[in-house]
Length: 131
Image (cartoon, rainbow, N blue to C red; front, side):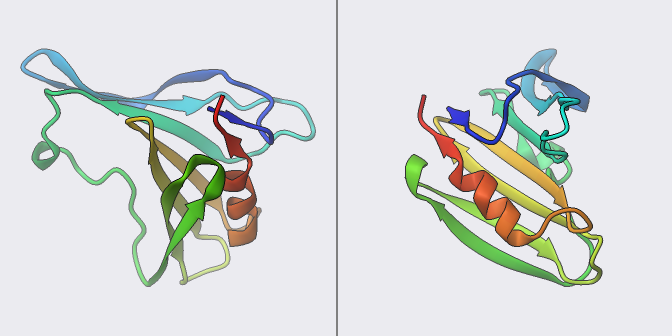
């Protein structure tokens, strides 16, 4: 999968993102490495893998926002998949969290409303294409 708005395909293991169960990898999360170019997108993009050893009961929430929120289901036509977008309604600086599953991987976007709005997140999601 590719995204025309992202000129960098480098990902790193996120902090505290490796979960083990019975000494086996249960879940691992990779986050994008920010590109320093002036046109780079300054939001966290990432994906996670869950194995047969994953037990969600033992894990805390993957994404969270405290306070009132808007929840939107957004269809990504190019990937034929649906995204769940959660947006904080408390302040203009809160997060916008988007998550979708494609080809058995969970993809996440975290944008801060101070720099991005819901239309920006829609544009990022619409920029994904099958590779």
